[in-house]
Amino acid sequence: MVRKPVLFAILAASSLCFAPTNVFAQTSVLLMPKPEPVAAKAGTTVEVKLPLQLREGYHMNTNMPPDPYLIPLRLTWDSGPISAEVVYPKPELHKVEFSAAPLPVFSGRFELLTRFKVPASVQPGLVNIPGKLRYQACNDRMCLPPKTVELTLPVSVSR
Image 1 (cartoon, one colour):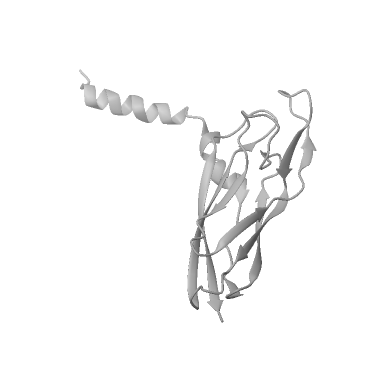
Image 2 (tube, rainbow, N blue to C red):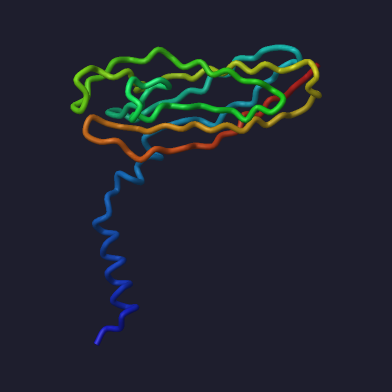
């Protein structure tokens, strides 16, 4: 007679063999290098480009998708004393099965531009600006679960 804990362990392990693997593929769909350190003078504005690359066959919605049920791409910075403005690239139109009209999306390689305004009052030194990139990668058949990636931009402030 098989004990219940052993039977449960066998069933749980065997169910992993049939689990959908595409749920865990999200990390390999988007390539995003660690942000490079940036030098900025107090009282100036500095532009930082964040390069992104989606695996071939995948796309993500723009920051302003046409339908409310589509999950937008969002780059946000918890900038503290340094204010930030994000500029998104021009999207491309992509035809998908579930929409009568082509959707504006990002695919392949593209960059997000952030303009950081460094107030004159900021003390010289290293300021680490935490950020979050929220997106949902899709192909023509399905969308993966939305994902939020945390990142940190090191800014070296001088006078």
